[in-house]
Each structure stands twice: as C-alpha cells, then as structure tokens.
Length: 80
Image 1 (cartoon, rainbow, N blue to C red):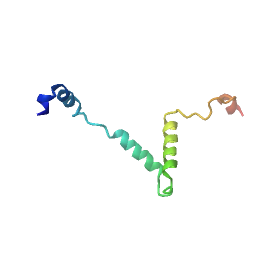
Image 2 (cartoon, rainbow, N blue to C red):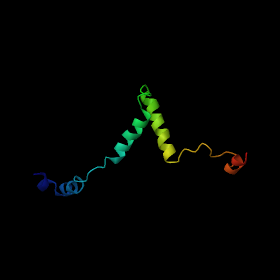
Image 3 (cartoon, rainbow, N blue to C red):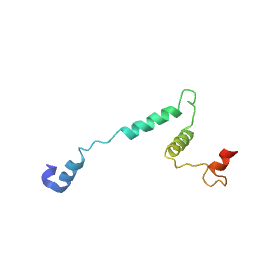
Image 4 (cartoon, rainbow, N blue to C red):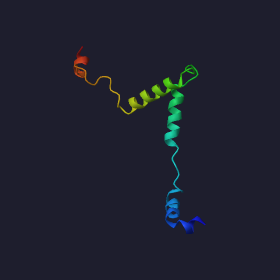
C-alpha cells in the first residue's frame, strides 16, 4: 500500500533496507573489554573501564605518544 502512496521513499527504502550491518567492530569492542575486565579486575568502575579502553584504543592507533616533545632524541637515550 505504501508503495503506491510514496513511490520515491519506497524505492530508497528498498535500496538501503537490505544492507546488513557488520558486527565485527562490536565484536572487537567486547573482545578488548574482556582483556581489561578479568576476574582479578572485576571491581573496575564503569568510568575507569571506559578510560582504560580509550587509552588502549589510542595506544593501538598510535595517537598517544608520551615521548613527543622530549628534548633528548631516541639516539641520545640509546647512547647512555
């Protein structure tokens, strides 16, 4: 019935409705959180858990660099 009343919207819906969402990113989040929230760390607050997950994410994406801006270069520290 809706097809005859709204042909354009119906056509758009038929183009996009069959597209399946990927569960892979969601599975990665749960996998990563299970590495942080273990039996020994079962009392982590939700805020701390979120902070730890964000630190892990930025470390993996190499967006968190603790040595950026140091006066000594890597070569200077290795000569020690």
